[in-house]
Each structure stands twice: as structure tokens, then as C-alpha cells.
Image (cartoon, rainbow, N blue to C red; front, side, top):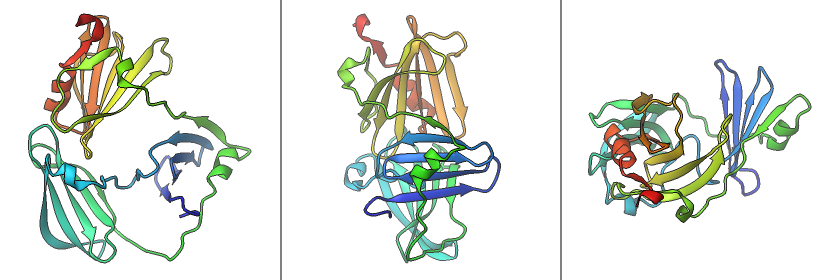
Length: 258
């Protein structure tokens, strides 16, 4: 903590060497070899280590939380909790919580076959009474820094979108909508974020690009589905089953088609 503002700091020891610092809603990534500094923003209470919702009561409608056995993670006793989806529109997971300090020590995202497709795990945990503060402003304004800002987008009313969603799985709600210009593009791209409190899905609408192929694509734990809608292309992506992104994408309708 710096005053009453939470700070997180990660240092990557493999190439590219980099340091990532989050202070409140500001995230700074410094590439140590090139001195490039990227400044971004995210919700102030959203950790880039583990991000779990505070209100689990609402999630009980869509996920079942099951206590498992106690195990050792990073040489610490931990309670395993399984997160079981109540339908096939979302993935499940497992989290191991330290019994000593209630910190999450390990997390796995499970696909619809129950196989871990993403994992974060601590191998060593050391808790100090105080951690050295990283001067985030000094990182950004250093003389040799090549700073690039990714500006915070304004959350617009969804009524301003040029499309509607006819297929939305139960529990997913609209949480963010913005319109922005993408790199090397003249036209704007519309971005809608859906979330059920645990999983998040992004919907993008942009002018048709012949380089962007329609259909499914999977990268790591993220599924993508792209389809043409008249002169536009819709892309839906998220760490959810392929069925979910396709279902949402096929329910995108342009307002002038209604």
C-alpha cells in the first residue's frame, strides 16, 4: 500500500525483461532492455495476479462452489475450492486458498472437458511487514523512457451501439461499451464487454476486413468467433467455451436490420 492506494509489482526474469506496476487504476509496464514504457488503466480494485468477484452470492446462480481436500501449495497448507459451472456456457476452475493468510496460492481454469487450460501458481511466498514502494511517476517521466499511453476509454451508453444482442447466456450482463479507433484503421471499432462476475466476453463490431477470416480461432485459453454481418464483421472472444462465443456472435443484429 502507498497511503491508501494498493500497489502490485511484478518483475519478469525472462526475455523480454520487464517490470509491471499497478497503483490504483494505473498500470505501467517498463521494458528494461528498450526503456519503452506503456501506461494503461484498469478498474482500481482489479488485480492482475488473481481477480475474483467480491459478491459470490450472485454467482451461486451460475456456479457451484465445492470445498475439496486440503493440500500444500508453496509449502503452505491450502484449501482447494472447485468452481463448477451450472451450464455449458462457461468454464469452471479450481482455486487453492492459504489457510494461514487467505491468499490465493494457485488457480486453474478448466475447459468443458475438465482439463486445465490456464494456471497461475506460486512456488514460494514471503510476507514482509512492508514492501518497497515503486515510484510509478518516476518510471513514466524518466529521461530515457519512451512512453506510450493507452488512454482510458469512456464508458458510453449501450444505446449508442449500432447493434443489438439477441443471444446472451443467462447471467451475462453488459458492463462496458466504447467506440475507439484501432491502429492503422480509419473507421471506429465498437467494443462491448459482457460479464457474469467471473467470466468475461468481448464483442467487437467493425467494418469488414478481408484479412480477418470468419469462423473459429483459439489462442491459449481464449476462443474467438468471427462472422460477417452485411458490410461489417463481428468478433466475439473470451475465456469461455467455443459454443458461447458462437452463440453470442450469431445473435448480433445491426439496428438498421430490425
